[in-house]
Image (cartoon, rainbow, N blue to C red; front, side):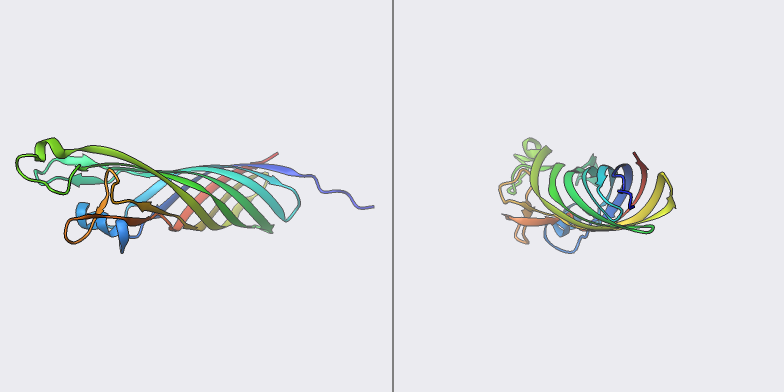
Length: 206
């Protein structure tokens, strides 16, 4: 007589890092304007997964990635820019031996706090009033594919792996900190927050 497999709850905490591209769109604008050649994001994740069978589970992830790159103004004053991404992602995971394969879809919120100028038309008479720090927030969808290998595969798991995300935000021309074209005119640009990231996790099963 067969015995039904007991469902499990997996609770996970993880650390992740990812470097953004600087090749095009708003990413390239940040490189040209501020010198940010590949912003390094780091952060954490919390995941609850319901493992409904030996090979399949569904879960929910709450994660946060951030960076605080430094920037020097023309007056050599140092300013700290802030980039923070918070995400809620629904996950579908396949389990095989010491491997996990995950696909996910959810929403990511981007919060940018940048030093800069309120107007592209800066002259000596208005520069003092224009300078300052502005905050902008946008939301868009996020899709991911992830592979994890369990280095320690007991009730307490230690794992390492990688994920590929598709996550782009449209920065409009009227944004508090828009991108500018070669003529210095604000224009809508895509901020690509996707790419390959590395992560390590600790998981306990109940």
